[in-house]
Figure 1 (cartoon, one colour):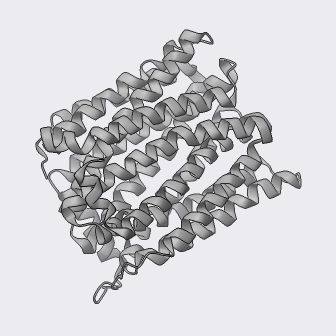
Figure 2 (tube, rainbow, N blue to C red):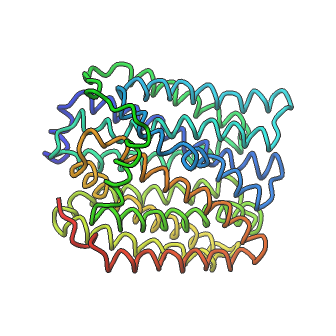
Length: 407
């Protein structure tokens, strides 16, 4: 264990925050796979409906994302985190309840996922702006790297466990596991002792506060190109997600456990990326690391169209997930640390909500477009369109001010 990690462990509230985050993320990745399995295998969802399900989770970010940032900046973040966790546990518990009473339908599933996404929106806005309150500025990149590492482990083990649970007990009961994980996360967060102060003399002018957050993100010479390229990255990666699941479960004949294995291999790549992210950022600079990671994503997804139902095809699918999550976590920790370091505390909630809301809106649009294009033009064509788009965002990052970013 490095000295930097040991110093982080001296911050008790960070350790509890880290624990809660890991538990809830593990459950989240169980549900990500279980929801897809319930929709495709239990309710018979088509490609377009599979894309709609993925989009449903991100719709609230499009509708309420900017407002959520303003509201979070007006109040203490910890109560928001705890309340959102408890509420998400209750919402997810309704899915197995509906399944066991034979009332679960695709529209109901979409609606519950929208409510879940709304709660997650407020949680996410508070989560990213709460970390700087419990970790010194000089430790932020390392703290984000640790969160990414355990998040990657959760991303790897969660779908693997989810695939096994779906196979053994079915999708609805697998989703109940995530409900329990949010309950545990909320209880752990309730033990934090960090004292927060309400923002001084809030303006209570919604439009002015929204404009201030937007100006910061889209007026900054580095944040602006970073934000625009990130929106494109989320759009085109989201085109792949529902298509990838449908390709494996319907077209290639793999089962939910096989799908979980590919995500588990992706988790290994994520752990590797998060492990080297902060060191790479110090060694090469934030900008070059972000740019390199953005080029790695299209390389990863270019492997998917070549997959078949053979062992070689399955290996390609695993390699695609490995490289994708390697790229995502290599980028994430240094990018998050950079944004948390340069953003004034009073703008943290709005800054992160602005970026995240548009990114998640891009996820929603991408998931819908990916499903529709795959159904109209074929899965291979839809995948190649996404790869070309990812190459475009990487080119844009390469020639922007982001490449010069330093902490």
